[in-house]
Image 1 (cartoon, rainbow, N blue to C red):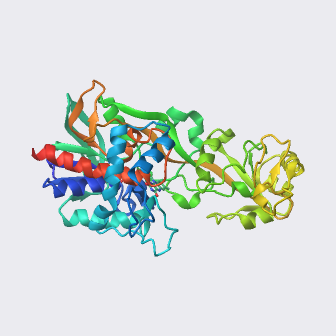
Image 2 (image 1 turned 45 degrees about the horizontal axis):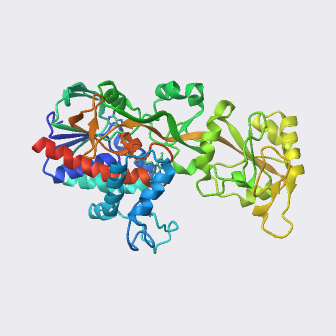
Image 3 (image 1 turned 180 degrees about the vertical axis):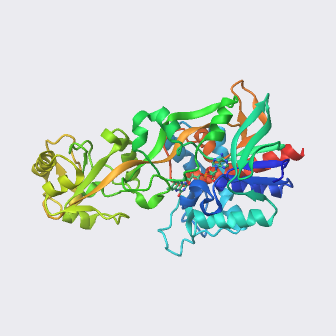
Length: 461
Ligand SMILES: Cc1cc2nc3c(=O)[nH]c(=O)nc-3n(C[C@H](O)[C@H](O)[C@H](O)COP(=O)(O)OP(=O)(O)OC[C@H]3O[C@@H](n4cnc5c(N)ncnc54)[C@H](O)[C@@H]3O)c2cc1C
């Protein structure tokens, strides 16, 4: 490995590749270190599928228009204002160039005419998903001379004053020190680090599923914070979604989401309902349920459906747990049968059809706490079925503060001169809470490019 590259990029996802390619285009000698093996390269980017872009008129990849002011407003609304206005403005402006830049680097986007996925106004879809984008960007990076090393882990760095002095790296050959002129940290968050999660969430963390890469250990993030980098966001907050409890501990991706809550009722391990299942019907309902599941005993709950609900439910990756009777289903779920039977009986007795319309969406309960405000059809048709659910962690809201040049801010108010950050590791500067779809990839592309250019300028300057 080049021990003295001009620019050393840590990570192998969207942000890292955009930073490495941009730094190389700017004339720097660049090394990219990816902790994962080749087959698992690319972090959570592997699981992604769309990015959010502002555009003034229809593009081959997005319908209609999405003015920059609308993007900023959506961001403001979703985060409740927890977004640095200068960085948010850079993100939105940079998003207008993101698809052109990706296409120029041989990434294929889904044309709106192709209908592989329903086309969108606010986002562009990656044709072939995140993996296909990664393959294209890795090929570009290699072609233009970026040195790429897999199974190479950065353990930490040493900051002296405002400069990174050295970086500790390990691979199959052992541990050694590199002294790059500039360092770009694009190595994501700490959501795969069970000890760290437990420190934030207590025992509840043991009930979480990590939806993405197992390599998000956060060790570089924690090392930076240890060395005087300023933190941003909230370590006790995470973007959680409802996933099937049978998902693998890591890397289940988007296919394990559970979305059929409106078609049934949701009970905890005691067989008790705890939230209105009819109120959240947007396509992103799995996201609001993630946090509710985190507050459940053992972070486990079940959607209970009857045969009609199951027929109406969206497709699921795992088969439902099914039984001819509710009592049999309760036994299969290890719920006390009398509790589940009582919950379903109370619910069925409270269901009220809407007389003046045939729309079952308007059926609701009366006198039930919590209510089911829409889609409240009785659970009466056997066989009965259930999907077990847990909170699936996507990313955390904990990162390093940066300035508009992506230089890492220090707790003493200064900025590091040769330490830059891009991607999820700095995303909480822009999305301190909440989320809008496609935001993370756009943050990776826009700030990865800025960080690569700034790092090269520093290294070569
Ligand atoms: C299931 C799922 C679906 C998603 N879908 C979307 C979507 O459609 N659109 C969207 O915008 N966002 C989506 N996201 C979020 C998005 O994928 C990520 O936030 C984004 O990919 C982050 O990019 P990144 O480059 O910052 O980090 P990552 O892509 O996670 O890359 C981090 C990299 O750092 C490496 N690394 C970590 N530690 C070290 C170390 N110490 N040394 C060396 N390398 C290290 C990792 O191996 C990895 O390659 C999704 C996330 C998940 C989990």
